[in-house]
Image 1 (cartoon, helix red, strand yellow):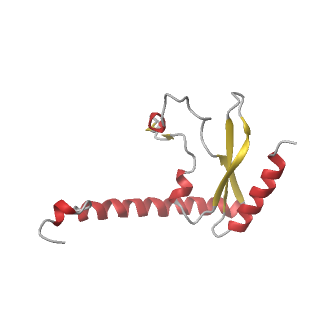
Image 2 (tube, one colour; image 1 turned 180 degrees about the horizontal axis):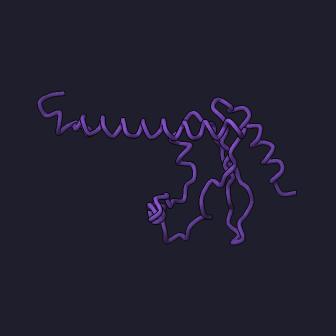
Length: 132
């Protein structure tokens, strides 16, 4: 890097980048501790893959990204937490259709390093949810 490093490098403000990175790491650690407590009592977590069925064609994901007045996140995707916590194996599979006829997904999240268990649960759920 030369004298123009601050212009050439996209993350030239190292101090700001470092602070933001550390904040994310602290948040991830706190979230991980909360999830670890949950998995002390449960083998797996079952939840929807998305909070709603597919939006109309004239809308996009950005129409559903917001922080609500109570501080909760309003978004389509319910996989974000588990993407942020890579220690938890997760998968999504088709789970049928909603009352409006659109498909819905089931997300299975397992304990740390329980990949085989998550895959086994997914196979069992897929067998029981598949149409006759």
